[in-house]
Length: 250
Image 1 (tube, rainbow, N blue to C red):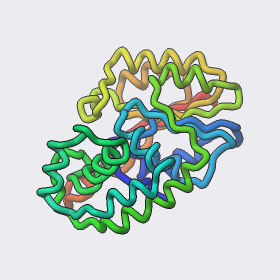
Image 2: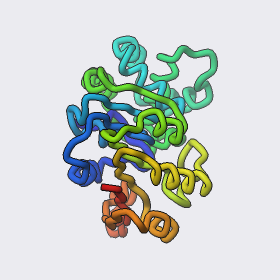
Image 3: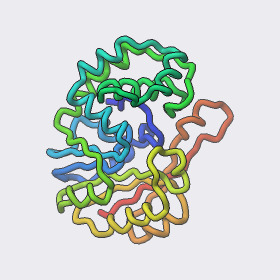
Image 4: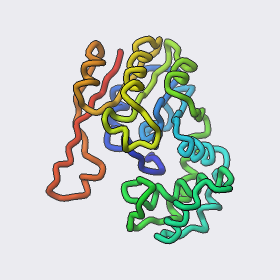
């Protein structure tokens, strides 16, 4: 199944490639930088224990509301129309005096009807609000046994690391951090590298193809891959190839 929204750095184009390179067996599956969880949703289940984590509170609130309060969230969304006026009103009013369910509904709406799912500019695109609302029932079912966390990556890895753990790690890309809502600087990239060097379990890491990352992870398995650029793919005649790296320790 597909994720229920798009997100910066989402792995829709790479989910099959990533899943094919996972270890043969593991008993706990952890998405360290969950985002839209395209890889998680690609399969019905990866392991006995599954963990979704992100440090973005809006994302975590949305996932928790879908898991625990799906009918209420669907009811909140059922009153909405794909309208520039509503979009602009929601941007200005977001988080002011709202319940978690109201906040999740508005955040989801802003993502779905904005340009490139950036939540900032109205997309002027056709969206079936009813269909996107009904799809949440399938997401609720998939998340029924998934643990949803909001932790710094270092803390999360420490909590769930075991010899039988597998971490899928998709951090903000190096020198593209400005596109993400949560700050992630060069020290964080190095902190992530140092943490992954010490774990008991296995990891698969996705990154943009750049010299710093290749140098940091030179002692691990590194594979260069190419995918379509999510936004550039909309424009004919434009080069929409984007080079990335997959890195793993097994």
